[in-house]
Image 1 (cartoon, one colour):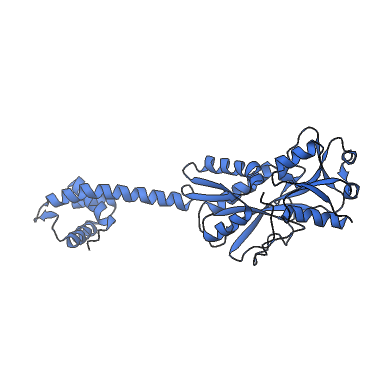
Image 2: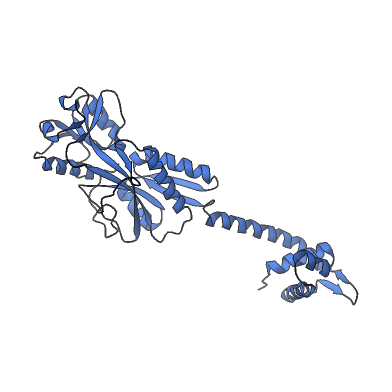
Length: 331
């Protein structure tokens, strides 16, 4: 099988253009002997002389003109490939697949994607909004490069050994109350004062619902849950209408008239947002994507949202170990 050396083709192109081995050597920075050796190696590779040599001159054969012309196309394509490889390895080109749960998709991800597409317009950023339990196996399979997931302090999770977990954001869990509620008048709310209230929670068995039960149990009562929804807009609407009260993570809360969000008294209760990726993933876009997500968390920082660059992350949240697979509330 014929194997052509790009270096020999470049040398041939210059010799054909200048019409002289000596002139080609000066232009390329080689010795005339090195140019002659490269041309001889190319002739041996193709099995055909490229120049008619005499004692005082060298005449270019038709084969040399043909190969130099077609070789220029090959060299241009090779240079283009080298540029694209450089762009890929530097993260300017390529594809990154990001999975997210809805509340992070609405509040955090837009900032990150806007930054990535602005700084790397040639890169392809693909977004897939899905439930966290679907994102996790997709990362393990390699279908996603990064998955945004979460873990509650009171419902800790662990992750497969193959994954690296990067904590991004701490969300305070806040109690949503109608503005007219008697417990909504202070800066914080005592959960004991809501033992007789009607509660709105996520679906039964979800991490959010489990967290509510454990938090209320720590304050000595079982919440009376009458309504369940995995849509925080629905939850906020029900609370605003005076139907009940709710405990939600800060990303699920949008300030609105007739609604108050208060931290409960006692130790802080939080949900931590993390980015999961395969430790062995070599995608050059991975580091800038994680940096963009970190910056996006800074952009949404508020009284209830603390980027982990400013916070201490609970150690159980990001532990790399076998999954315990607790129920999650898919938001």
